[in-house]
Length: 479
View (cartoon, rainbow, N blue to C red):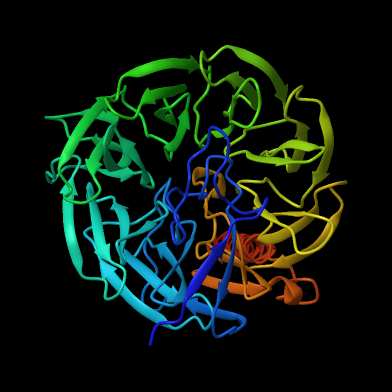
């Protein structure tokens, strides 16, 4: 017998908002769940079972690292079939779905390429579909109960090439009268006979997989699209490594406006719609976070950080608190006034901040959760930016690679029957479900560094140099 499951919409969760998308109970429709990118939700099940700490470790050989590759996608959490579930894509070509309480694996589905974008989920008429975009250039719709394929749609034709493809996380919304799945795609071919790159955005019917429209951009990778509704119409905001931030009509794919940066845009945008002048927030590798008018693209304000911004901003809109939060490769997290861009606080982490923040409110004070390239998960008090906790979450699978070549997974926060959890897929190969209460007292080991690599290299060089010197001395004496 299925338990009755209810999703509560709170100020920290996602519900109906003025000018914003209205979400169904069990949905996780975009990579950070809503257009404000709070990546947070509260769930209550009839049995009252509370989640516990669990982890899932990849078995088998480690794939060779490629620039831009991630181990796990950012997770998505949804409620259906009487339970709460967490999904993620993986570089082993699979989509995974686990019980969010126990960590028990429900299914895994193998695609033809790495799944680097967050899967999204929706329930209609008692049926749940999970949508995942694979770098085999295909969008898959899977049944949420048993993982069987409902349909698959190629957004780019597959050809054996000296190159590859990257697809963004899908986004669910409406294209006119139809529910649609929107996905960004980029293909590249390094062969002498066909040397080319191409990027764009496609819309497909969420029920049948039929192609609705396609918008071609320039020749660079496309970020995760964000669907939003404004003035009675649906729109998509999408960035690209060609330096353009574009807003398109969701029903036709027509570009409404675009903003050009001098450097690549790697992260997604965030939208603040519950204000008299709706704003779009976006950063770039130029290091500036900009607030743009959502209707026209006109710049309202900008704030320069010390280095790249690859993360997606998060917007907080509570009584008396209007903030936009973003991390930078200068190693700091920033909280800014959403209206003016004035810095409310900044916090120095132990490494470049690549991740997008998640929102958590488990008491009178809210917390922002984020991961950085010092291999730690940080919980920062939202009012002051001081550190509430930090947890070591594991060293990378590979030694000697530039972690800045990829935008790694970002955490999400979920309250299940009153217990707050953080879910995160690390670049150490482990997918983790961790109660926040444990995070405040659990330290998973000493922070990792590559000191062993450098020490080993020095010892090898000294040994080789010493052997060469001894051999040279023997040769001189023999002469």
